[in-house]
Amino acid sequence: MKILVKCENCGAGYTLNDIEFFKCVDCGCQYYKQVPDEVPNEKKCGCGSGYESYWENDGRGIPLCEVCVDCREKKLSKYEPWVLGYYSEEDCGCAIEPEDYY
Image 1 (cartoon, one colour):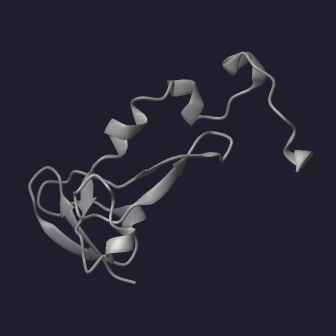
Image 2 (cartoon, helix red, strand yellow):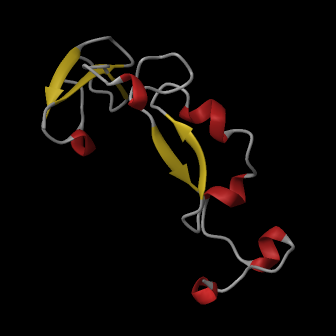
């Protein structure tokens, strides 16, 4: 699947096969934003950017919020930094149920 992206630094546009290895040819930066490309309304992010949304999880795989490349940083800023990485009972100050609880 082709992915359309735009360099955040210089605005150059690219079509990529694998977004993991992006590097802008014009300015050399590695920062990009995905360009909305026929994203169905039910998959568009609620922030109004037009980008496709996805669920961001905490360090234990628990869904936190729906984000896109445009609003991810802002939405995740309301969480304590330790929540985004793997955390233990000592970090959060409460008991964590074992994974085989269900």
